[in-house]
Length: 382
Image 1 (cartoon, rainbow, N blue to C red):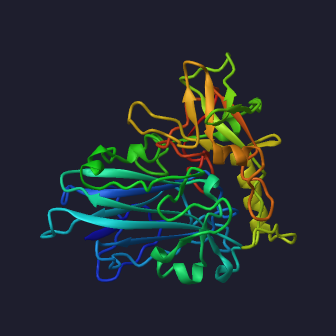
Image 2 (cartoon, rainbow, N blue to C red):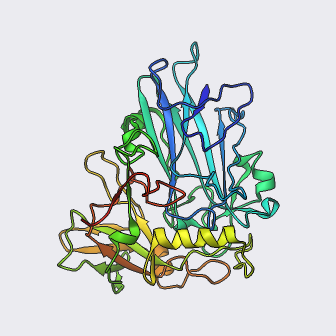
């Protein structure tokens, strides 16, 4: 098994394996698995570091976890999408299954020992042998604080991450994904061949990389949600719902969940009163990327017919009846019946916009920790 980093901003170190930077899956070997980790949260106010562990079928570590943090030079070392390549070495078995664990941590930049796991994904996949496939790994605010464990321990052993406890907690057989306890989402056997065939364009908004000025695009949430009006929740048999205004073009519609303004917090989730200039600048950057006026958004990816990616699992769109339905657990968040442990709302309302083409997973958000709209083209209202 061989692992390669596609983004130099994510520093990976392997034990007894090969790690290197690569712009794409090379022709030899042609087969590989590309992990593209993305998020609707801000860095470093909500995600300060990542750990990624890759293990074989026997639980043997194939990758020493990366440590990706923001340093005091105010340079974004943690950038999304963060990508990792997994492929078979020459002479390896014709197929191989791996376990992948991705953990996002929250906390103060200067106190790594206090960083706590917030969101994680734990899945299994078969490394393809005939072509290259992409797994989009999304880290959602709807799953914030559902993981438990400290960076000091988990940086060396991501597979030891466990679910947080509490009345709304999921169990190991049904881990959280997009705000709901669900069956694990694995990509084993023939299922891996249903994933999109790799191309950098499907990770960087049509471009060859995050700095492709001519091809890469990002989705400008601040501009696209300008003038968006929060919608009224009504009870629904499956949870709760909102009516889609008649003026909204369903082909272009993007759903945004209202959320509090991003704040700099301690590992315990308490807002830091005395912030450094660095932390303050990141708050400003997060607001510029995720907010328009007083409203800030968790942007939900829509289905992409061209690539057959399904989009978010946090909402179901009934185009015939022009309704958006949310599962019960997400409804509790929207009604503020379910908050973070410190009482801060996870999300608190719904809005929709059609001012821009639909937000899809293949087009990252415009943000300093993602694709920078001062470098690449922003998808925004004309």
